[in-house]
Length: 453
Image 1: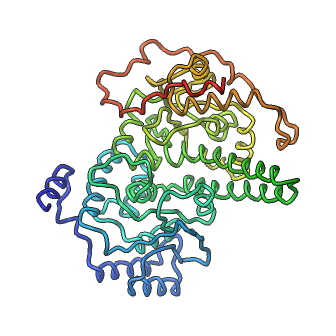
Image 2: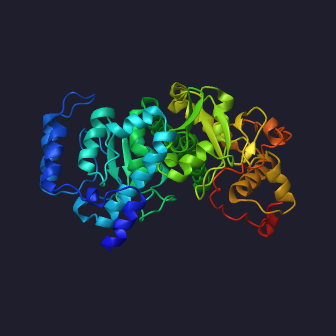
Image 3: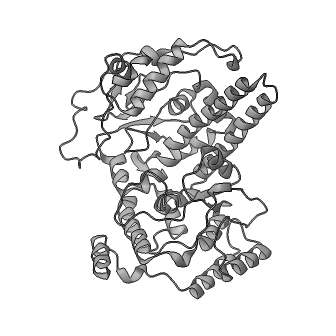
């Protein structure tokens, strides 16, 4: 087994001896040094520092940060980090992933993200101790960690955000596994933590949590006046629907966002940067579309909130934020208004290019906004995102006005029947020098959707 580990370490440029974690005594000494540092943005009080140190010294597993009087109830999703239980293989998996990530992050990540990596010591070759990491994050940003057992419901996820807690898992992916659909430490910690050093991104994350609070406050107010159980169920379903639309803004910025810096595309999304393969793909490949957006513009915000996606493979469209400062325009109230409007609009598939898009690069996967309907009507294969979007939009146009929309009419405009965009000659052919694109999920045959037509 040691020979196998050594071979794996060599393949990733890692020294196997460096993957041995510090002793408990050394980690406690380091935690004491961190807690005592008062030259930070958010100094930790002497009482909180002492309580944290006592818990760590007593071997209490880390669960939820307790450096303020605010907390969060994780319910059935609560977990804990028992640091001594991590195996040699798990520490090696972390070290190899970090080594691979660093090669792509240094080339493709924005400068602010790279600064955050150094600030929070993400480049370390052993799994971070959450006691120390939580203290460093709080001192710099006012955020804390909350350990969870698995991917958690959006409602709870954004509740954590509204209170400036970031949910993190405690398990590590298998050795030499690049892409993972479910979050692990390689995504939560090695992907997300550095983004807290970008103030506009950290603020956007909290604003998403506050938007969730507004959505469910409105839900509760309407539930108090519900006519019957059916009406109440519709009110709850609408709130859940609005949260899905809010997630899309989060997805295309915090998770899979690109940004323009000095005229070049750079990555800041945690979903991108936690996968070395997708990091390179998102910036260099000619497979995906890249669309520049200014989130302060209403039409660009609506483009984000009405675009569907899948999580099972690399993205087909990336949105490139023109400047980080523009993210400040995404206040909780504005996010909620955009979600309410999106409920009444047709939506885009993740392959679509539409008139009005500020297209930076047309991908080999690009389609017009109408192709999904042509494929649906002709029962031609399409991926799940295209199918879901086409079926939703057709149903939207055929259903009566929903009285929950307070009598507002459906805002159907050019995005429904717009002609395909003019594509520059040659841009639909992938570059022969590109690395092979990741294997796509097979297009789904449409024999089972006849009842939708």
